[in-house]
Length: 113
Image (tube, rainbow, N blue to C red; front, side, top):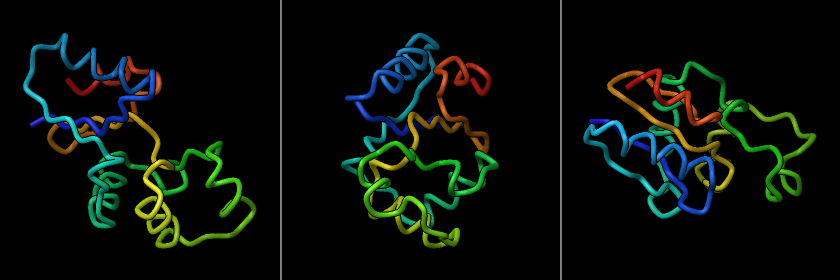
């Protein structure tokens, strides 16, 4: 089952959702601000994306600038921050089987469909 970690208020996330809808494939929408991913789920997403936790962080978000910017954080601390403040998670993320992409640009999603 294809999953999209989606924020309806984000234009790129809405564009990614439209790509999935146009594909005609079944998928599940996870509104990750409401259904916050567990730390283990975040680790799994990172593994599927093949990136480090810092690469999943939206460093322009106010909470990042106020609470984390300039600090040296371990991967575990970064995962904790992503879990505690899901707004920091880059979006949209689409997972298909064991492959995942960040939909920035949204066309990246087509690579795993």
